[in-house]
Image (cartoon, one colour):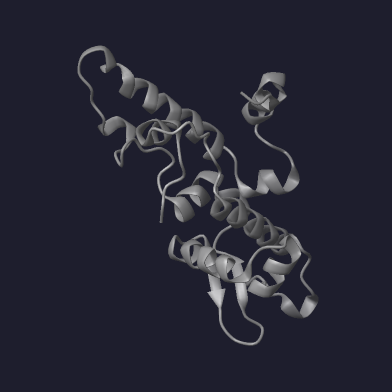
Length: 181
């Protein structure tokens, strides 16, 4: 998988691109929200066992208007990362591997796009510079820490219910957060 562009990656590529949340990550989170919602649905009496009812790729793709083949590849990454479980057969599909409150957005980002932040293919703490750029790794580590704080501190359950962590709500309430720069 390819890591999402970060300020560090964009700087090393010599571009003026912004940090993008990839389509893979967006689609993964949207599909997983549907699985989390399905897991919360009241079960019929005859389905009293603990297994969740699987949701098919077709259902996930159509309800969120996602490209089916692309979603299949994303779900395969999520399965390999242990976030979803697949079930084959006519009533097959996908379910969450654990409760939604135990799956962070950071888990999802990493499963489909790799590390949250890299600088020229290195983790921020692995970088080093000489001279005037010597303090730069501290900034790259701080960028990664801020991403971790939001993404690892927010789980699917919170997103599904809209009860986001106080820190996330606080950051989003800043009018400057909504301004393009």
